[in-house]
Image (cartoon, rainbow, N blue to C red):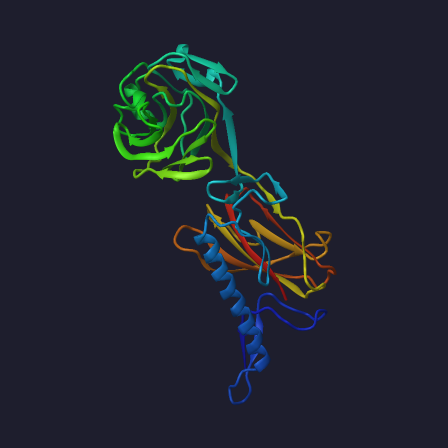
Length: 384
């Protein structure tokens, strides 16, 4: 009798092999083949090892894992923008992932703002408050995900701040107000980061209600980013997450900048980014040298986070090469499991490379049909 199970063949390099099924044979006494059991155990052990490594990568966000880990080649948790090829892709430094979602970046300019703009000096994408008690807001409104960033450039110990606020409360925007916490202080649905001149620390406020004191200690040339991702508003200082607001919202919003004391506040390199149509992307690392040339196959373990329904092998394709990319072998996908409840998935991708020779290992991932997909990490590639 025979039982068909998922398996990677470990037979001779030039023999036929399958990445889908393996016949597990039994004798007349229902004892399984020792060879088949060994091969199946190896596959299961690889899955377990990859699962453990994937969990470690996900749990240690601050730890940079890149290169070789044990038997796993080309391990990368994308703690940095490390890939060599990233055609049409965007790298998210806050989330440590690559995404196929396209983005539109708008640099600040005088024509992008409304409010008390007569009290502002706009030079390039810099915003210089030359008078006190001044608030401005973006003329455009935004739905869905949005982020903006700025550099703290001048006299940042004066009372100032920035915010994302619900456009339904536009009538409450105060563009010439000297009260504490400034332009959005009478709103309910405003996510505000504000500095008072009596402190060097920024506070997080929902409207005029302080959620947290001292979320970060500011300094000149710090790069501050405020984003709304999936309705959740977060604040980053130099790409380090400093605060996540308690309340979330998907409502239409605007961005605001304000100063409420004595002027002489400047924000440089002001810009905002919002999503556009998902792109078809290509991702690949630099090649890594194998210990032994001419393996029969390559098994890759990767973590993806589809943002919509996809078909693996069609909407996302992974190829592997042992000759530096001259010849590619398309992999077959098998889901190992999910990493928590956030949407990240661990997949095993098997490729037959018996038609190739060499020891220069490289992978390539392409997406198709304009699907929004995040690549969160390469757990690693192993040889068969």
